[in-house]
Image (cartoon, rainbow, N blue to C red):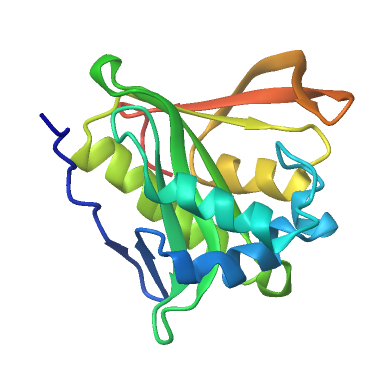
Length: 184
């Protein structure tokens, strides 16, 4: 018997549509994942080949919502993919997950990541009824640390050598927000 796929929710904001990835989104996502600037704090080295991004998009389309789900962050007017937001390491039955996000470097400092992550948080706490969201952020990523702090996440500690990218081990800061925390 085939596994029933839950409909992929679309999350709307003032400027963005967070929707299921499509194969055609590989170009937009490649602008993020091939950029050394955008991926300097990412969990993989920059994609040297578009084929690597195409494979990543395929994995993002075929997801297991109880464990992880990816949204293409798309411009509301053009529907062009400009990034990605997700929850992962999900334990939906245990009501917790981690979040991740990336936005095309040419669009940084416009509040788009904040807008996308806010919609994702609202979905996770509201629709999914999660109790805890986590974000693992490398210490040097000041912009991402500031983003989650603005959105009510609290720093809980340092995870030493928690992430391996290529041959390099990296520390990560653990941030978390509970569904019972006061909204910022």
